[in-house]
Length: 151
Image 1: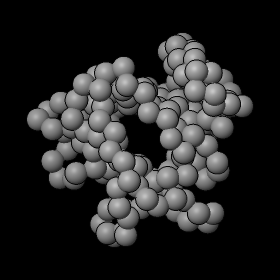
Image 2 (image 1 turned 90 degrees about the vertical axis):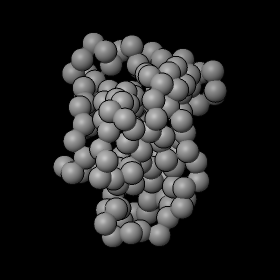
Image 3 (image 1 turned 180 degrees about the horizontal axis):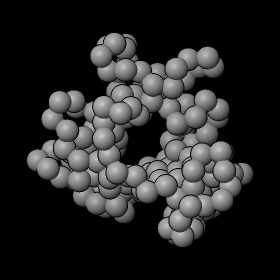
């Protein structure tokens, strides 16, 4: 969400393109489509995909709350390992013209609606209008997730 939170990312499908950067994208595309068929969720287009690895970062509890796009979309996350470091969904929805990120230093007024515990093979899918963040894993663990957005 900002340069103050370093992490590793493998981009499967970059924003604003329809050409995948990696063959790994197709594995997660199929998993996303299978999940959406099972749960009767329609997919018109996948907007982006990445594999993210975050590590312990003691200075902060979690990343800046953010939304991935300024248009209507869903987020789907596949948790690839068991680790501390929940996904946090906040009670604040993005509104047109607002910034995509709330900086933690500005102490925005939000409350956590949901905490999703990363558990290997768990899937989370939620409305991308809600600001969300990732807690940092503890004790030098690594949090590995697949993140895609679609509408």
